[in-house]
Length: 156
Ligand SMILES: [Zn+2]
Image (cartoon, rainbow, N blue to C red; front, side, top):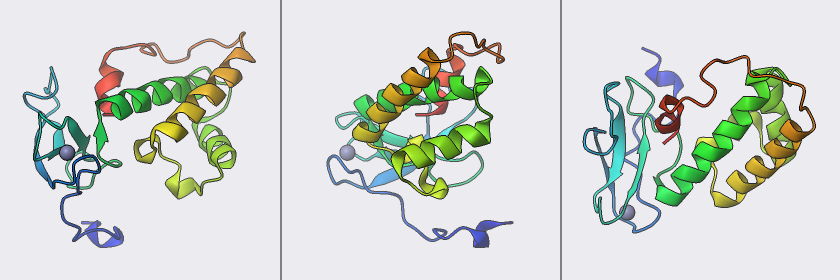
């Protein structure tokens, strides 16, 4: 196992930044409309009163980002949709796109993850990606499922 390579192996479940309660690890059953992929989430103990959670990397207990409420989850999804189109359309490679984003936000590459971003950065990503896409109108999606609904929950 490569668990030792991770810095945060023994970290407890993340705390909810909205209400201050702890989160607990559970399946996304009853939260995702379709949890056929058996996604696991850290969910705020006050859910559903406090609608905040973050999913984990499949097969691990490592969260993909920070705990997010509904509004932030939706902004992260939107930011990811625009950002992904930059490399789906071949405007940049995926790596170039992450380097561009890292440079744009002044963040190190290791921290350039939309799942870690708050509303301010998400909005910035959305606006900047829109500009790139608007400046490259002749590019076409290379990915057939670019607007597939299945992508949405993947970033929650
Ligand atoms: Zn909460």
